[in-house]
Image (tube, rainbow, N blue to C red; front, side, top):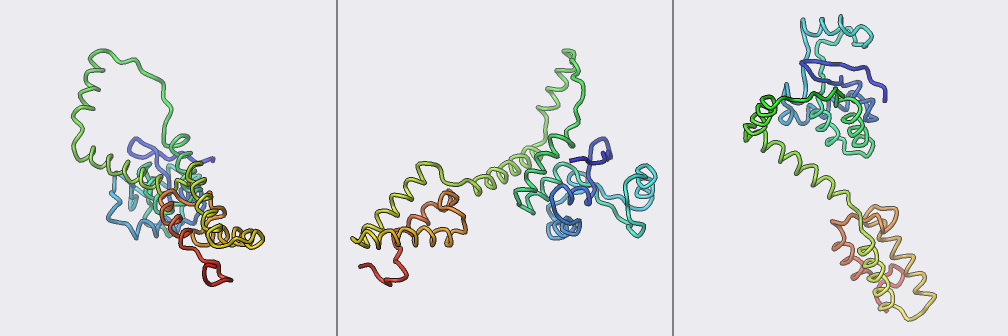
Length: 228
């Protein structure tokens, strides 16, 4: 991913067009995400807004960066702002692109400086006196990330076996006929995939395991209309 580097106020930022390209969407979608969640975005933390003389200066300093003539506002997104947009889009491509942006764009590689004892003490004190508000915000963001990850976790091997056993028990409870059982196995797995919107029962989300097991235990073949 080749991006023109834009630095503002001492750190790297991305314009909406760059962010949209990275996330595989349109710039208007970035603007819609912002408009729909304005209360969550904070200027200086998630974005920098350029307008008036600042925007004119930007156009002079970044001549190779195309900005439409009629644009009177330009949003530049920080790493935290890019994270909020990835969260709003919530696609695999957006999350993959965000990881890449953090590693290859936002994180500036610098030479390691050996600190003196005094500098180490000052650095340690700065870390110690972080405000409770910042700590709380970080905890909140980490919780959101954790919940998002948990939402996407699929069944492990043991849970897949539990689904298989529950399916087998249900089919064998319904029918003693081997040919009919084969048809029922195909039918129930097809309906499980339709019910939970997955390509395979293995792709069922872990959070849905209990719902899936209850569905299987209560399943009735469509053709028979009732258990035989």
